[in-house]
Image (tube, rainbow, N blue to C red; front, side, top):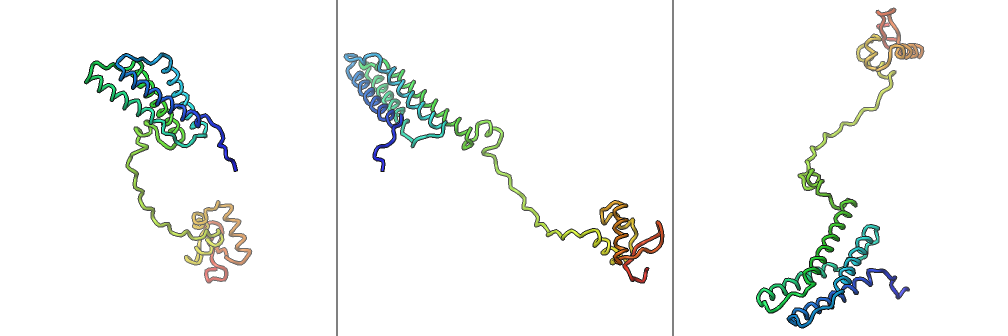
Length: 227
């Protein structure tokens, strides 16, 4: 049994980003409450934004290569900055003696931009994978359109077994009593020469009998009164 989980960047980046976010927000809050007495030293914003980019990029790379990890609450960082900014801005509007921290607006906008970039990458991946249709497909009516109702198909009648040409010839002669070669051509679908050979074979077998000669000839069942 393995007690140590395999190392991956996400397992480190998420706790580290959480720590940096809470610390940065605390410093921003103290900077705001101190009324310009305290100012956050420069350089922290660049490190923090780089860390947010690394976290977001790592998630998207894993998604695209098919090694996506369980969902983390990365959007929580965006909500924290937006709520903090709104609260601070409202207080600043009501009490002008307070001043917004220097980097607050820049950090909030950059975090929000990274968040939407990640969302865009996710949607592109879903469109490519086929789980979500693109906007162009929706405009073309491929999604959201009213499905066409299919008309019920008529019950297909069972097809009769195909008869061989010899049986077709015998059936026609039985029904009509006699049959000329010209009458047999369309029902058998055979060429004139092929039908001629078939009729000769049937005569030799004793199935039918030819009556008459040339174009006035016709065929009857062997032993019938017409022969």
